[in-house]
Amino acid sequence: MSNEQVYAGGLLNRALDPTTQPPEIRAFLQAEVDLLRELIRDGMRAVDIGCGTGRHLAMLGGRLALGVGVDYQHTYIVEAHRLVGSQHLQFVTGDATALPFESGFDFAICMTNTWGTMSDKAAVLREMRRLAPRPHSRLLSIYAPASVPARREWYQRLGHAMLEITDEFIATDGGFRSEHFSEARLRSLVGDCDVQPLADIAYAVTF
Ligand SMILES: C[S@@+](CC[C@H](N)C(=O)[O-])C[C@H]1O[C@@H](n2cnc3c(N)ncnc32)[C@H](O)[C@@H]1O
Image (cartoon, rainbow, N blue to C red; front, side):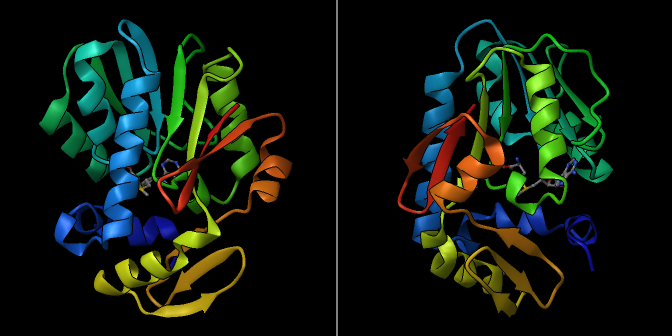
């Protein structure tokens, strides 16, 4: 099974249930929210790549001039519309490597290691740079190697036993593959970027 098929099976909804989350994961998710509140200012136009059911745009909604979320899982997009869709919060089904919008965003975000589950990472970075052209207006939230024990626990609680754990990824028997990154690997993939620790298990990368 591919990540796309695993997400189609509803993995995200189960993963966002706080009762499935080890404390390190909960702290990381909260640190992401705190960081977004700091970075995204009133009146910005923001695009969320791999938005899932839209929780980050929903949280920022009041301060955005425009929020657009994109995800390849149509069921998540339908749910995002139902939960928070409005004139200034829009959700679109699409692939992160070929996004169906013009440039003109103040900020592009790709949260909760979404980029670490994508196969064509360079194409996603290209799209983020195209949509939010100003340097350091693009944010990736990415797992560090220190996340492995908490993620192993979390994925097992979600019904995915471990198949393989390496220095660069976890693969589960349910077909889910999620990468983690050293700071050096992040810099080699992203190029010019700032890398800051996020909680104890992740990095915030702006480029
Ligand atoms: C780890 S989840 C995070 C969802 C959301 N950002 C959140 O934090 O609640 C990753 C999301 O990215 C989506 N996704 C993965 N690869 C994608 C791609 N190539 N294009 C669009 N969406 C993708 C998945 O369907 C899933 O909703």
